Amino acid sequence: MRIRAGRLRRTLLAVGVAAAVVIPVSGAARPEVPAPAPASLGRTTASTLPEAYAANRANATEAAALAEGYGAVERAATLRAMASPARQFLAFDGRGTGRTAEVFGDLAGADRVAVLVPGSDTSLDAYDRLRSGARTLHAELARHAEPGHRTAVVAWLGYETPGTVSPAVLTTGRADGAAPALRSFVAGLHGINAHARVSLLCHSYGSVVCGSAASGPRGLDVADIVLYGSPGTGVDKAADLHTRARIWAGRGADDWIADVPHTSADVFGTTVGFGTDPVSAGFGARVFAAGDGGHSDYLAPGSVPLGNLARIVRGDTSEVSHA
Image 1 (cartoon, rainbow, N blue to C red):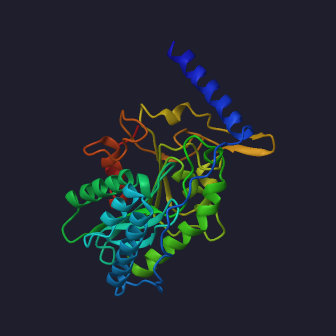
Image 2: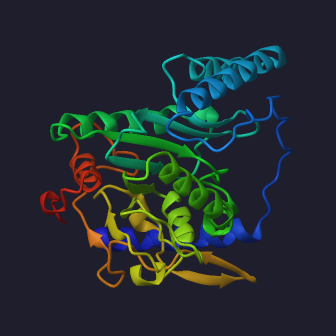
């Protein structure tokens, strides 16, 4: 019965994929909440980090005031919280769905830096989930750090994520558009801290973004690319990413992404899907144990995947448990 149910889910998902591509999304666009242009910052270095953080907090304060005047109460409250003196934004743009890069820890002094690349439905208005995961990972890294070693985590919302129920989530279009920004961001991190070992932790559609960025002509200067809850990367094998980074993959036992067809096909002139399942033997990633959780449970406190993600970031690869 479980096999039949799985096949039924896959069939329904395949029908949904085709329908999403063929049937246009209806409904008028929502008016955009007003916000200022991002703060004008030069090249950020370790010595100018405090000024960058301060400028982005000031920008968030201005954005909150504009949102309040517009009547967007919830957006205004979110922006006011982001303007807190305790927050550290390497980048901030309150316009539209938002762009941010929030830092947890001492970025300039860290030996290890993890960059979280989120998937669909992540925006300023749904930012708490990304931030909560980044804080939990940073706490886990700090708890097990060796004496004298420091870690930092960056929550990178550097692109307009697709909606979970939208045609955009079925193709690499948004990911290909985001790839140059991710490559530029990673290069900027190395400009701030040249000695830090950087790992990309790519969740759901974020793994498509990481795959596209790694496959570019300049590649990505990172030590690890970790794919979790992934629908695929847009390539059939890890070797096709053409990166020197170690490629990891994990999926929770109760993650619905397992029921998404891991393939790609031409549907009415549009390539739909992202190729081989990253946790399959044919893809060639290092598969780590991701526990029994669902699609949003990888960074849950005390969970199996959180522990393994932290070990990968710290470079404790021999301690990573495998599925």
